[in-house]
Image 1 (cartoon, rainbow, N blue to C red):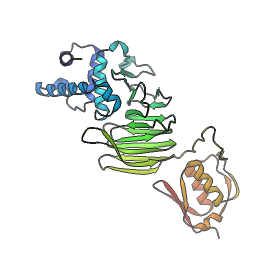
Image 2: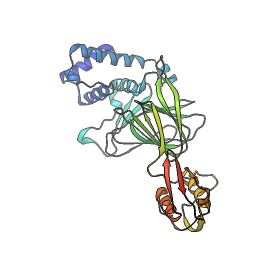
Image 3: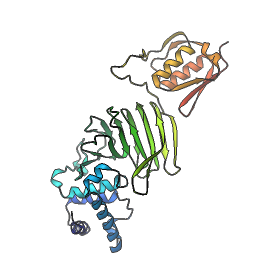
Image 4: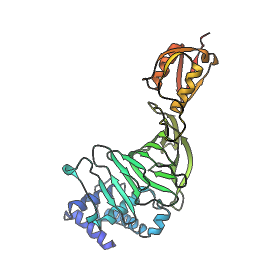
Length: 348
């Protein structure tokens, strides 16, 4: 696209002479530039400024080799997405748009960019499953956008998210998986986790279901490259909350911890989820709970280990199990960060 073509397209939008599809593209791309004012209400100088920013983004994507070597060279996903949208105007015949009342249950805005990236925006009212080239799967929630390459690099895998999605990443230690959002960079090898990161919020929330992830602040150096720093490690049933305004991470347990699925072709731990107890001691019960949920449980008074419990707590979630256990041995538990502490006088 030439500078003249860009100018003409913007002018047609303002004149009301562009097609509905072109209008949707322009409005989508304009939104990604973080502009608050209405495009139609702008003065000549403001319009020139917007046009210049757009042209700079397009120019940055012309060197495809540079983008492949450093796909985050253009600061954050907005610049990539905006350029991809503009590139898409040139090849509308390859796009599929579903807007307004024409939305089908599995419809989504799909934009194939000239530099090999695909942008999918879930415009539906239900989650959309996306399968990546490496057989990883993403469950993209409504009003969320995922940007990813058609083919990953030989040494690493990088995607970009705005909104919420659940990721199930195929394991490949030689090709680590990086998820970029507005506030953080998440590094994984093979795991499943959920991310909530909206463009209008300073909060990014990462919840791990299986495996392990490392969450870093998303910072850029003087050259505009993303750098990895200040990371926190999250394991199953842990939640990491990053506040970009306060520049801090908070680690805690998820609201309802779930048993960790056992991987195929691994030695069974013998944990079937059955907790039918008959005079079982706390010393035998707690290690099973720790192993099942991947959560450290600390007993402050060692005399409690000798307390015995009888009952069926198989169908209860972790916290209900702990409630029943503590009632039986006249103790209490509290959650501090990612650990559970049990206190009491003991049964002697």
